[in-house]
Each structure stands twice: as structure tokens, then as C-alpha cells.
Image 1 (cartoon, rainbow, N blue to C red):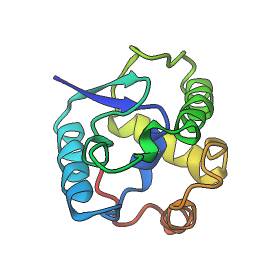
Image 2: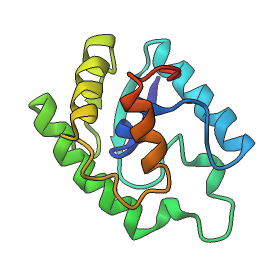
Image 3: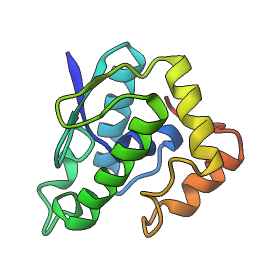
Image 4: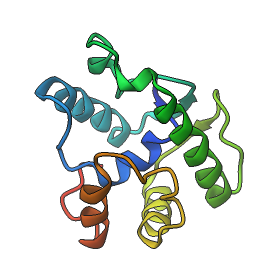
Length: 138
């Protein structure tokens, strides 16, 4: 099986420490992280993904908004540049330990954080990165 992820969630996963929009969102995120830790690969999707699922029933989910799509475009470009391969919808990716380490190093340096300004989690993610990604769940 594969985990369906929108491109900007490739960045969010790097600093996920169990915080989120709701208990249902956090529980679902933990399941997704468990699947990735268990070796499932990622397939890049356009729009809402496996992490967004609990938010889609609410009124006007931000997952469907232009800001999320814009973050996807910027994140896809930055992560693709880092990994040396395109990441269009349908691209498959393995988030193994070396890839995660490389992505975290780039995130810490700001190289792949261009999609993040304006996100409500920006400060938390910055603190997690500054703390060496201590406590992250993936």
C-alpha cells in the first residue's frame, strides 16, 4: 500500500510531534506516520490526502483552499530540487531514514521552508527544527 500525501505534507511530517487541529486529526496523523514508519511508500497527490481526511467533513476545510494548493506547489518544487527528481502528482517516494535526514537538514537551514510562512504551525515547526527534531513521531 501507499500513503497519499500532498506535497507540503512532506514538510509537515518532518516536525510532527503529535499536535494538530483536533483529537481525530491527531489520531489519524499518528496512523499515517505509523504506516510510513512501517515502510509504506508515498504517492504525491493533488489536493486533500490521507492526513487531511478528518478535516474534510467540517465547514469550509482549509485543505480545499488556494493557500494549501499554493503551499503544495512551492513544497513540491523545493523538495524536488533537494532530491534531484520531479514530484508531480503520481510520483512515488520512499521516506527512508537517509531521505528524512536529508530533508530535515534542508528544512532546518530554511532551504525547503518557502512554503511555510503564513501557516499557523510555522512557529512550532521552527522550534522543533531548532531543537534537533526531538520528539518527532516519524
